[in-house]
Image (cartoon, rainbow over the protein chains, first blue to last red):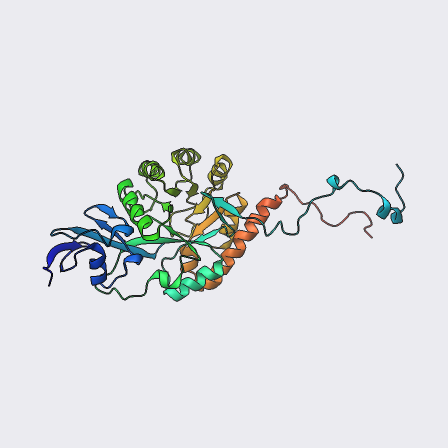
Length: 69
Length: 283
């Protein structure tokens, strides 16, 4: 059982047991191929989501496309 | 030279170079290009303010648009199973043009589009940097700054801007792949307020010019095209019509009609009447 860490996702604090960004996205019930992720202020390229490790205190923004003019 | 008897015409060798060249397909072959991508429809529609995704998708279909604008927002973590835009409007069939609506600084807009590129994998984007909430007028200083940075990062920014021919030139020099002046404030439906400046921008631009914002009804879309614009971008005029799908269709026809009228070249205006029926032979 992996240890849980404290992170911030879209402005809200939460705990996660995921070890990578892709793991976190799936833990949230989302599909990695449908979102874009900013990790501690930097774009996390989609091709790297499976490899980028999550660390205590990380700040993430997870966005997608919505209707707009 | 005496006129040849009619039956002789068939035997006369005609100089084909003097024949008018009217291609039957000319009306259908009027595509346009932005940043190396070719499109047939000159109408770009937004995907905001619709009652639901079904209505939105039906309106896009009726408009004939090949490009839709989309916004970039945080996913709803508390309810990840909500339907999403991509389930209804297929990005493989319709080009998603990510926008920076709601951004008030160059940095925010750049950050948003970097994320958009990651989400969509494409570099054609709509840049808008707003100056204030009341008018949603663009902040041109920030817009110009963002255009330069984005162009240097390989983006192809189509840029929402003021209807100012000098600002349009500066944006083009900074790397804008399309100039998109407002006709009137975003969401106002007031129509094209300054036809002179739109025409001046069209005349001075070497990239496509699209009226973005302000169109309220079909005649105003036609007007934008009659001024020589390469296209029109709209959202509210369709989404807030009583029947959005019918208005989407009206806009499609208006853009086609306005474009044809521009290409056809309108008649000269006269101060007084000029009868269309012959005066000779009046009884």
